[in-house]
Amino acid sequence: MTRARGAVAAALACAVLLGGCASLGGSPLPAPPPPAQVRLAVQAPAPLDALLATHLDLARLPLTAPGEPVGADELARLLAATPGEVRSLLQTEGYFEPRVDVRREADADDGTPQVTVEVDPGPRVRVAAATVDVQGDLDRRAAAGERDARATLDAVRQGWSLPPGAPFRNPQWASAKADVLKRLRADGYLAAQWSGTGAQIDVAAQAARLFVVADSGPLFRTGELRIEGLQRYPDRPVRHLAGFGAGAPATEQRLVDYQERLLASGLFDAATVSVDLDAERADATPVTVRVREKPLHELTAGVGYSTNVGPRGSLQYTHRRPFGWDVIARNRIEVAQLRQAWDGELRSDPDPDFWSRLAGGAYSREEASSEVTTSWRARLGRSRGTRRLDELVFAEVEQATVRNTLLRIVEPLASRTATAVSANYHVVWRDLDDVILPTTGQSLALQGGLGHSASDFARSGVFTRLYGRYTVYRPFARTWYAQARVELGQVLRADGVQVPDTLRFRAGGENSVRGYDYRSLGPVVDGVVVSGDVLFTGSVELARPLSARLPSLWGAVFVDAGRAAARWGDLKPAVGAGVGLRWRSPVGPLALDLAYGDELQRWRTHLSVGIVF
Image (cartoon, rainbow, N blue to C red; front, top):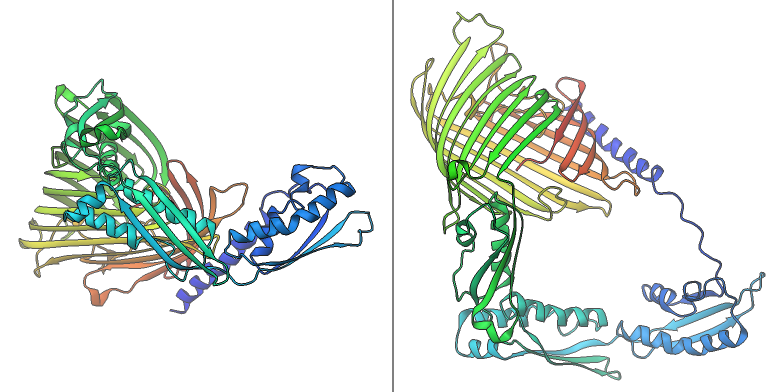
């Protein structure tokens, strides 16, 4: 435990160094501003002083008349106009009775005029009452008892952002009005506009009475579906992915969801969904879908390096209409120093419920610690997905053989083979500001499987496999970004029943516990690391840009912990901590980490690309 605290302390100390790096590697000093024609001092409560010092004409002279001297007549005009400017600016912040004192001070030694503006803003006007009303089609539908219309009307009124008691400020007043129209248009009232708005200010009572009346216009409903941009592929998947027929309310969320499903289908590089805003056609407004197709054939090659599997190369071939079938065929081969793998899949175009049928298979050979694992699988199932939610339901046959490289092949357990047949459900939910480079939000991956396993070294039986991974991203302390992860897994089986090694768990390496070898953290049997039935890993990371000139280059500090074990009572997490660099490239984050493994008492480098859901 003392070593663990030492590793954590080392990581936190590096955070201080990263902060120093940010200050040392900042942008070059800006060019000095032009000399001021008038030296202005504003004495007012914050943040009003900054508002006045930015927007008064006296303060803006270097921008409006750069380098020009201020004559006596012009200076007198500016001084006379300043009290009115102050009152106008403060009214936008809810101060209608300020006391303003503008004084011409003695000129500076270089002859520059000096002016002091002293302001007592007085009492602030607050909202005393706010009336929010909607006329038109929405009001009629709500009065007739339509549930959706009543929900929209209630949301507009309850969402009003300037309630009684709030300070009256022009920016909030404008924002509150904009939110009303935004909500109406998002719920299908696309021609909503104002019938009238007003703010009555009682200066003596420091009170504002607000009223807004919106004309919702008609509820727009979807009509004919017009598809543009198709050349290679049929229109059937585009129509299936709509998820609505003629007459559905043309809400913003319905159109956005449709667009996301099109992009997730694998057929299109780009897609936009829009409706005709002609109010006379509101009962059946045409829906226009514009798509840019992906190529029929696509070959992608890649090379790279990972500390998990060493140097690697990959080749992926995708055919989006093999033999004229309405399917997407994908094959991928990866060759790395410690891993060789193939996986392939046939996936049908989505049906009206957005599900695609799939058939797939995979083979891999992987070296880790003192073992070589070869495995294959075949699966049949269905999937559907958007940018926020992916679901996969499938039946699978999987076999794995583990050969211990330290034991002779004739010894017991030198080679072990297990085969499993299972039914599975996987789901990934994401609520992120950016799927590729997230800084705010969260993601949750859950997996569940029920099956039967047989092996050549243990008895057969039923098993259940459960797995979950939760990750959260949050901005932290203005310039820092925090990321935290927890990962849990368990295989439930009767004593003596064995499952394929690929269905069990190990920890260690990038995206797990840094500071340790890939898949090196598991239960130890006769001095050899094997896979476990339970898994826990957790991670906390803080990162920040290192330089204003290189906003995509970040420094990070982190602490990881975790292990796989035979049972929860045996699980003793290994701790790793360190520092890293992050390059936030357009295709995903590239991470280079230096981590200290507390149990090993040595440092290890890790390199990874992308994020894991």
